[in-house]
Amino acid sequence: MDFLGLFFGVFDFVKFLVLLTIVSFVLYKFLTPLKDKLVKRFSLNWIKSSLAMNFISIFVVLFIFYLYFIFVGVALAVPQGEGLDFDLWENILLVLIGTVRIIVATIILSLVLLFFEFVASITISYQDKKKYSKTIKEFIGVLVACAIFLILFLFVFNWVALGLFIYIFYGGVSSLPLLVII
Image (tube, rainbow, N blue to C red):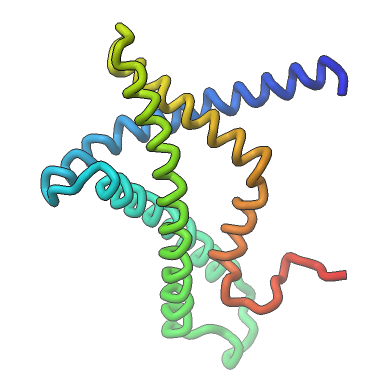
């Protein structure tokens, strides 16, 4: 590998890190007051409130994506005949089965996200003696957590996104339509 390729690889990593950090920091600032309300209302500790907020936010996002693709599939499907098309109850059953898979995936993703929140929290509390503002400390904490996430996601667990997609959308299908077995 030449020096130029290494430079542009690191440059692309830093660009992606900055974009992910900004989005994550905005979500952090938006969801922290909601998590604090959850703590006050149900008297939860940090771990339980973080897991609950992670579960709710991830479930909503995954369920909206799932419903979007279901509606697009129904809208663009070519009619096959009266006996072959799904009726309303079969479509509802498909959504309910997909919801169970989304709940399982959401539980796993919530636990994984809890690790990165813990890393960000440790980084923020490590900077208590520094004379930065609280916002800069939180941004640095989110930056460190996002850097660890990207390193793990891009270089170690790069198969997770496709596996999660296949599990949610094709979890009940015995042979996947997109995979060719040779």
